Length: 275
Image (cartoon, rainbow, N blue to C red; front, side):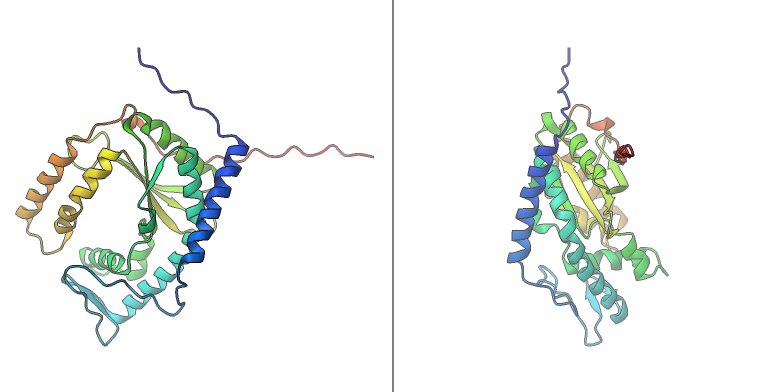
């Protein structure tokens, strides 16, 4: 007989403690971080093939290009993203703490300038005529997080963490559960809209094994997505990814995980009128 772990409600005291810890850690990160000048974003030096920021203000890398106007709009988007992230991270930290998750790669929660521009340029190349504004509006992972649990705690942990994010006013705009696939990537990738800023952010829910497989296949996936990769090579790269993810154990109940419903706070009863 299979025993399922009982789901315990999160008390107000635990929630208050988690938020206090998350806010305190977030404040420390913000205090130690260098301020971002409002007029521009300085991208880190790229690895591999060097990018070209032309004298006209455009951007180029790996056969991809943004003209000066589009490049400036992406830079402005990056500045806004860095500002809105400060209100998102404390909630994600609290959800990780209360669900007993490991928050993996928190220092990489902001997509780098080159990575973001490469993704936008690729999207615009694949959809000729699409504006940079439309491409930016569709981005889910300019701010991204990874929560990880051991296989035996995974399904319960995802349920708790996602439920907390929803109860705090974040709306899911994407819920991709690929644990039921026979081939390819395995995890839950969720997209959210923050309640006040509307900023989109991504939370990936992993086990240690699925995260290791993702890291192992990252360079393969990047090559597969390049516009110049021939179809035959793409199929070969996909087969390599399939073989790696096939070895990842599927947690019990993970296939059935669905997006949480946003919880509406219960109304406070009105006080009786006194004479």
